[in-house]
Image (cartoon, rainbow over all chains, first blue to last red; front, side, top):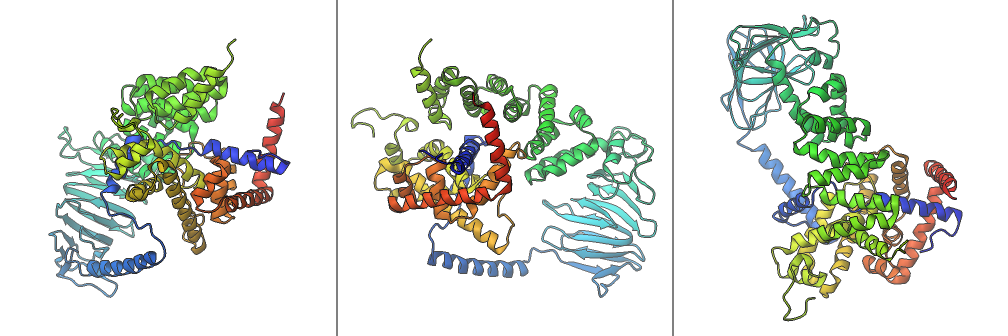
Length: 421
Length: 208
């Protein structure tokens, strides 16, 4: 194909070459993972491929299905119901606490309002509801059910709940939050709570924006030390929170560990949801050096993924290096060699060495065929067919139908036909 | 296909015709072999057809689901690869039309998903690629597909015609017209003009 007849044609040809170079058929997903997903879909009803009237029929069918779904959702007997005893709903759907005001849900969960407290029940589903405390105090008991999804909000604070009992209060005037755990565990989010504070039975969290800090009082029942302790949140957590400067740190042995556990899952989940910058922001607020030196393997793996996907190569490189240094025998650390090779390809030299290291550490790893193929292509680009020839031969013997097989055959032929010195 | 009487090779080493027969006969090992053999080809055509900002993994799987469902209609088992390409091209064209409709009705500004595979998304070449595909978005999907298959995939005119299910002269007209229009649009995109002029300077400096 002679594409470059004129100057403008040359430019279009350059764009074509760019697309050829950048858009290829390989993937970071392993071949097995891709096929496993395909198998899952093979067991689900097939997609319509026909067009025209079949598509029209499909639209009509979808509308009927939607109507039926709405009908059944509306009539679903599984959705929770609730009754208010000793009080009444006002015109805005709020419950105002009286002498013995109790909101009782059909799954056995209860909220008891103190006199003068005001709460609202919202988003009732078959698995839970949002109980919003506008002000005052409330005692909450959530029945322990699988997949229960309850949220208790008090002022600007959210309390994520499974099966638990606690007293919570919020004062609009003093901007003060107070939560005293009785059983179970909750995660509190809101001002000064960073990405979440885990509270367990026996612990008491109080404070708020006006006070400038949140304080956790008392050890959880699971903790070894029987004596109660009073502590503010550890510095790292405060550094996550806006407006938290000037708080005297007092270390708390149990809570930070539990908090870190919740954060790990949050990062992995955030990466899975595509919120890469949120993970990066949290890590930077916490302090990147500190995260690299003390973060768990799961945290580092999530952070490395977030950095790679967000195009922050320099951070990705640091995190991957930290993974390899701190957890050298782990799977993610071994995979890190491949990703470091990818980054090195973009940013300069050293990619071939990283791919070699990956293959030597993971001869049957998920990225082994790609590492081999990429190494072969790099050698071909940098040093020609003769240097890449042996790698091409080995690639073909290992992966005769691999994504680089066609290129390997060409390189192999070229290296054999090249004139010998 | 293997000669009659000869010991048949394992399916993963068998030729396309044998694999096609195995797929038609619902051999349990055949889908895996077809996936390993054709997934890179399908993924590459889809990525090149849809552009760098389109996540193609689910669409690759759609192609294979369609292949397994329709392989019994394949008249000549030797043509399995061409059959896979035809399904891929048809699926890509459907996706291009769908993305266009989504842009029209404003479901999303670009109707494109972030590409998780791009590690270094900020490089100028990645941006150039995005602008290049914006130019491609401005031409009709048949011409665009013909352009992709002929110039980026490097297919012969007859192969392009077969994949698009049109005559060879029509295919030729499609990709020639697309080339002219892409050249026209590229000259009017300030980013591409800047990128290409820098590229020319670099390549002229590198020339001995």
